[in-house]
Image (cartoon, rainbow, N blue to C red; front, side):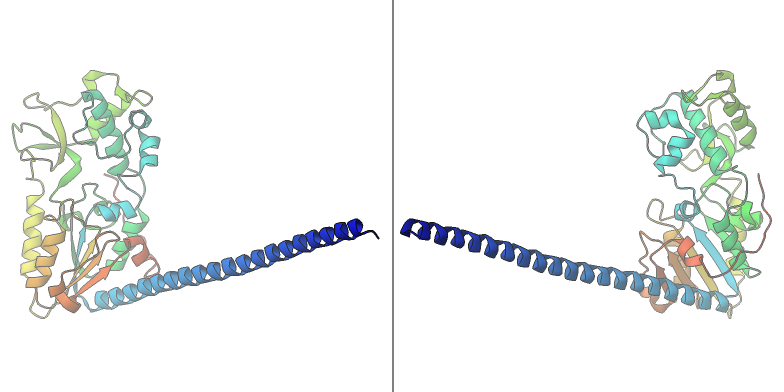
Length: 345
């Protein structure tokens, strides 16, 4: 072999060795990267499993504490905000449900059922009210979560106070005379003036509106269907609290009866306040009054069920239980609901 051929062979051999070495290095690097990735995935999976396990343990612990407190209570006050109805399937912020019920409003860019202050034409606003209230307030059939809650309370001496205006408590077995709704009821209308303290059942008015409602346009095609005050002819509005014109007369007697029930408690009775889904939209209606009630009632306990705002006052100490998830998770597995009466109107 000539010197040139020998040199060429040496170069070729060196190149092949370099290629082989590079390939082996790449393979080694890929293997190490795969091992590292697998280790990191395993660590992540283990962490996620630990978090899930801790959450489930917290759910179980909360359930057991609640079960014990409920068993020790002879009086129960259920205090509910919008979070309970949201957990029960009536979430005002559910954009998909809005699209299903009110497609014209969805096409306008609206994504929530909270429409107070939205500048809609009168007929379109009443189309919204008629469809929305019919779904929320007059929807057919019982609600499983409310039925489960009613079954859980059982035959204990109990009351309900709620900022919700959907009557879901009364429609799912809770005695209507023992449900205080200080924010009103979608089941009634009032004059916006108001020219009197009178209110009227809303369903006949809303049924007439829905009969003239065009779903595609979102408009009410017959303006004669738009409701007016039968006394003075002024505009009417659902009998719910939005300002000083709110007529609260239908709800004050229940509030008085609730106060008398609380005052009539014997010194050795044990009150459990089960507060569900009450945040900071209207904290002066449910959240803060329940804290103050437990403070001033010896032996009373507060269970606060709220995935977004579960904090409880430090001064209540061991008399308060923070439950940082929804009522559906808390109640699941506690008791199989028994059949209770369902009221449709």
